[in-house]
Each structure stands twice: as C-alpha cells, then as structure tokens.
Amino acid sequence: MAMGRRGRKGQKPLWVPAGSVARSPGHPFYERLNKLLDEAGFDEHVEGLCGKFYAEKMGRPSLAPAVYFRLQLIGYFERIDSERGIAWRVADSLALREFLSYELEKVTPEHSTISRTRRLIDLETHREVFVWVLAVLAKHDLLKGKTLGVDSTTLEANAALRSIVRRDSGQGYEEFLSALALESGIETPTRQQLAKLDRKRKGKGSNDEWYNPHDPDATITKMKDGRTHLAHGADHVVDMETTAVVAVNISLAIARDTQTVQESYELAVQNLSAVSQDPEAVEHLSQDLARELVADKGFHSNDVLVQMEQMGVRTYISEPDRGRRRWKGKPEAQRAVYANRRRMKRDKGKQLQRQRGERLERNFANQYPVGGMRRTHLRGHSNILKRILVHAAAGNLGLVMRQQLGAGTPRGLRGAVASSLATALRAILRLWRLVGANVRSQISTRSHSRSRHRVPATASFGWPERTSATDCFYEKA
Image 1: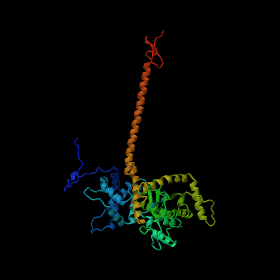
Image 2: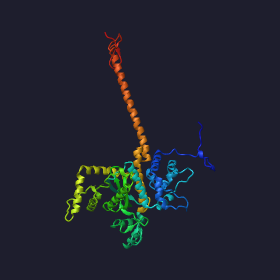
Image 3: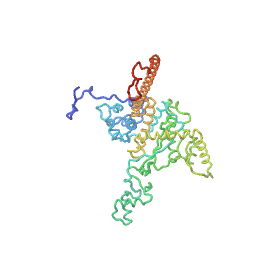
Image 4: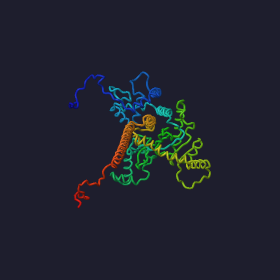
C-alpha cells in the first residue's frame, strides 16, 4: 500500500465533475424523520401558514419556511442552544445538509438569516406548527389529553445584572452606588468601598426600581441553584399518560405559580381543542379532554382550586402544611380544598404524584439542561416563546421516533445500537458458557464411567511407593 500525503493549499480547480463531489450516506435518524414529516405533509402545511409573510413576485428568494423550522428542530436534536451554533453545525455536516435538502454547491443559511426569518414569522404561526405536531402525535396514539400535569422553571436571560438601570432616573448601578458614596462622605470610593456599601443596603435587587433596557421582560430572580440572575419563567403542561408537551407558556420569573397556572391550562385546552378538529386525530383522544390537573404544592391556593372546580376540573395538587386553617366566610374555598385533599389521599392521587416527578421533571431535563435551553440567547418573551415552542415540538416528534426507531434523538439511536450490540454479545457469551458447561459435564460423566474399569491407583506393580510430599521413594521391607 502506497503512502499518501495530505493535500497542500493551492489553487482550487475552477470546474469539478458532479460525479466526484463528496456525498453523505445520510443519517438513519434524520432520514426517518424526513420520511415522517413528508408523509404528514409538513412542507405544504408550513408553506401555507407562512405564505402571507412572503412577497409573491418581488425580492430575492429567502429561507424556505420548511427549512427554517427544520433548522429549529436541529437545535433540539443536536442539543444546540443558539442559532449561530445551529448555522455552524449545518454548514459542517453533510448529513444535516441532506436533512435540509441542501446540495454541496449551495451555501447553507447563516445565523442572521435564521434570526431574520424568526422575526418575520409571528408567534401565532409558531403555535399552529406546534399544534400540527400534536395532531401527528395523536394519529400515532401518543396523545390522550385527559390528565394533564403542569410545572414551572426559570430560564437564565440573555442580559447581565451589571447593565440594569434605575426606572426613575436611568442611572446605572455603579453610577448609583457612587452617588450614594458621595452622599455618605466618600468622594472617590474604591471598588471595595462600593461593594461594602452595596452589601449593607436593603432592597438592592428590587424589580420595582431596576430593569434591564436591553431585555425589559427579564426580572431579577434567585435561581434554583441559589445564584441571582436576570431570568424568565416557563410553564409546561404535559400529558401524564404519554409525556407529550401540550402547552408552553413564558412569563415573568417573579410571577408565582398560582398566577400563571390558569393561563397555562387555558393554552393547553385551546391546543387540544384545535387537535380535536382533525378527524383522524380525534379518534385517539380521550372524550374528557383536560379533566384532571396534577401539580406540586407550589400551585396550591384557594383561588386556583376554586377556579378549577368551577370549570369542572379534578385537581390533584399537593397541599403544603399550613397548620390549622379558618374557613369563616369561605365555603367555596373550603369545599374545593377538602375535595382536593380527599383525592390526594386515594391511591390514584398518590400514583399521579409519583408519576409527576418522573414524567414532568424528566421532560424539563430533556428540554432545558440536556436540550441546551436553560440559558436563552434571545430577548423578549415573544422571541423566546417562538424558539421554545419549536423546541418542545421537536421533543414531541422524538416520541414518535422513539416509537418507530427505539430512540428519540440521533445520539440516543447511536446508544441504542451500541446497547443492542452489547446485549447480543452478552447473549452469545452466556450461550457459550452454557455450551461449555454442558460439554464439560458430559466429559466428566464419560471419564467417571471409564474409571470403573480401570486398575486401582493403589496397585504398585512392583514400583517403589512414594512418600507424602517429598517425592522420595522407599522400598517396603
């Protein structure tokens, strides 16, 4: 075999034969995903939804809607958090080019083109695409819609605390501290003096006094790990039977769970009602849509339980320990709280609470820490919700892929193949051990049967006998 050499930089050929252009064999996951989308008519559907945002004759051809939404799907399946990272990954991968139907001579979309297309297409269109994916899940019997679970989390905003300004005067944080130091008699304060002055001040992180001009929707929030950041709040409503995400809502991070649960539940009802309009999907849905709601104790309040009871919803919400309560003048709240408490003590309520930790928390893990969306790279609730809606839709499509391929992501498919090979190898080794043990048992049986006809080993035949351990020989007298 001859030794080759790495190609040196030089003048590239002007013309390249089409047959010599490198082509990708494709990725089995993305090939099956494209087949799924084509069978459901994804391209035609999104082109019909987004046609109003494009000019009919004027202007150069821009990013196709089907390509734009596929790019957002890639963000979930490849665990990429930013649109810049998606653009780089697509330009570097032949398999993703095949997924987007981009030939090698065509230039893949840049991140500015992706972000411009996102701003061009409104939020309602992204919601309709999300509902379309829910209909696909229902046709594959992966959406029931009777028992819903809701939970919330925080997303780190794409804004820094050092950029916040006063709402009344527009002063920056360091400028405000320098003014306070000047009032206290320190004309030229050092950084250590400003930090000491700021440490003793009460209410220094009040959202009523401070905001970030680059992202006004972000609020100063204490994250779950104890750090303080500018953040947004996110609510997910999940089908407890299939773990499909039914609705996504973005709100202020300082808003309480009891303030956002009503809006999130209504979004879920709207999405399920839209799915029920499809004659093929409605056959797989439950007849009692959104009749049960499961949540943790952060969503427990008198107002929430009364509102859900008025809408005919059976709640399974954990009740915090509030001690002895007084119900004078609150008969409706008392009835709703006691009814929820009775349901929670039954076997069904206990089972749903066990499933909540598994099916809700795991869903959050797939979407945010593992899925790469714990920190947002967009600003404004509308932009963030557009990205997360398609992100959650990709997770729902992963349920269909797991049903058909046994894996919901490309990495999961690779792990499933490796796991199946390891399982097959373990089965072969186990079979080999069994065969070996059987052969050894047969050999020992045959040797035992032959030993009956042998001369006893104690016969000396005139040879000198051997002592115990010294291998010395002696003759009998």
